[in-house]
Length: 99
Image (cartoon, rainbow, N blue to C red; front, side, top):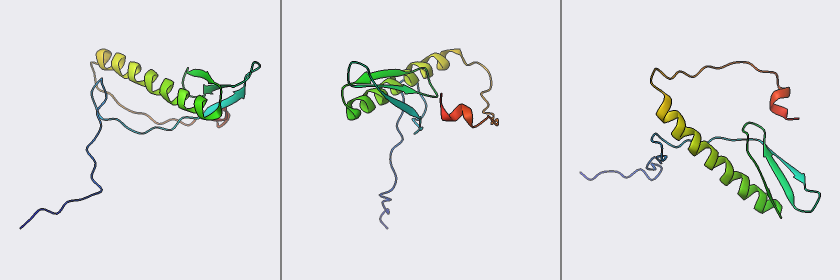
């Protein structure tokens, strides 16, 4: 009998620091720059950038966030020696709304 191919299966992506790549969502705030164009800041991470158009600035912030996370993953990969545990906490919604 032949094998049935599952077209929904995708080979997992791996990051440079090892481990699987996961999809995360981040909130960004676009502001008009005084000299023209846009400034964009990520609310959850210390990442900001700029661009001339909305499309350019969104592309730039995506690349900046990916770069930040890759470096962070490389640093964590070197430092972690013990058991890694994820915890869930409740936080005021104002923290997620941005300032």
